[in-house]
Image (spheres, rainbow, N blue to C red):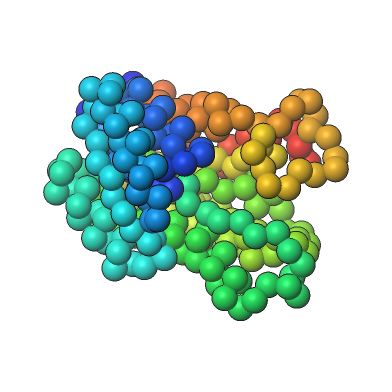
Length: 239
């Protein structure tokens, strides 16, 4: 399905980022595995990908820094000569009352949700425009499209709502370059740090496979006309 495509999954040394990177490789993509501090884990993912016969590489960058992000993309282009797929998965999470956030934590959460996504899009788009092809998938949150009070998640939700606005804006501006920009928004996952009191209508929490399947759907050639979409993978939770 993805043979000949070059992909970058940010935050792909662990958890869902790791599973997405491996899934893309299983489907034929050459995948750059990104990490910031988890180099050992990223190398393990690279070896797994290469066991499928796919070229891979590890790229290390603090994506809050535009300078480091640019250097990361230059390294990918140097090795693979192009970038077809960008999955913006990086996004950290702190759960506490709004008056408990320090200014540093506030900026950190908006940086690691919204600004890292912006930096990667900004760096990837010139290459994608040049090749007249690109697929960008931003990982948001299933509540990010609802403007509501979030007393214990305020900076995180501000960042994720911003990701959706960025997604739809780029979907409009980049469509003429054959670049699709979509979002996948997980709900309550099996590994979620905080589990809500209300039940999920489907009767279970989300799995990594649920997210991976949505990503692969958007990357399929049959989804070529889908851009600006936000796919909620939440089992009907809080609809």
